[in-house]
Image 1 (tube, rainbow, N blue to C red):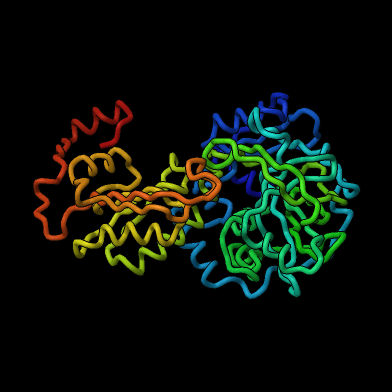
Image 2 (cartoon, one colour):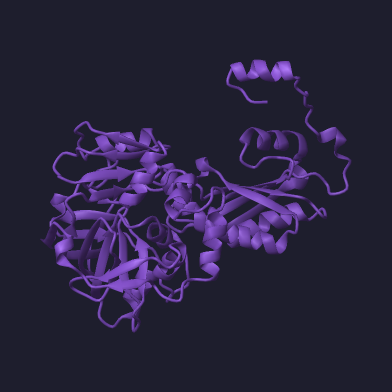
Length: 444
């Protein structure tokens, strides 16, 4: 992560905060207020380590970390998912001398944050849990928020995905895990993606790293962890030891409920003298980006197969990058608008609202989208309403059942319609007008 921080700083995208701040609410207040800026906190009360946050608040930052051309993030991810690396990376021997601290786990040494006032306590929010698939030498990587219970115990929020399935598949309900904090960008991204059970996200990360991912074994197990990680925690998860987890502010900016969740007991910890603890503040643009990317990939794949004139989608920031989608299409026939809407819902269960617009409307310009609704949409013909559909537990309005209603708005024109009455009037600027506009810092 150090190389990535240096790249952000060289680009002018990293702000360094030197003032001494409390890990309870002060650091998170700045992360919340400066979401478009990567922040490095050099002086957090109670810890010798620095803290970084908002690192991936913009797609450009993630592209910088992956060392790919601007605008190629989705293509890069799609290629890695289609053709993962044959190996999970180069495995090097563990060298204790590389770490300034390598000993008993003590979470009080880390600048772990309390993010919002009514949360249950200190939360690790950017920790990647690595666990072996049963009978395999491959690791599953997954993000889990973790409530600090003591200096060596956390309660980890699990949803019905791979780590939860591993807990069901192993005969013993207690097995080793390693927690990775501050890995290289390729590992951070890979851990956020959705891949099939049994495929290690390390193979995706190694592909994103052009085959240069370097791993080492954990001290207490054979679990592989990235050599360039900032902090490594080792221990075991016990599915029969449960603790209250929550409340915690999640994607929507609302407090999630309290649940009984498995406890991870930490035995070993290591970090370097200059290690940087990484935090992700829930409900920020960074959180939305990583929640939305897997959904966007699934939607794009579905639309590319079902709508020949598919042009692009916007999972809107105000919808958490998760619940609202605007899709732009060139209509070949009159059913394409509703086909696009239905395929969005079918491919991404969290979606609650989909708006279909013509390709002359920029899906990222919400003023244009609202204008299309005002001038091209009719409620008696353009509404798609689904009741009792699968939703997301992150939506507080759906209740514990995660069953929701979904709304589609088809704001596209009929395929053979004369568009002259629906085109927005424009004024061609003269050179003099362009010069005046530039003096007001306005282009066009």
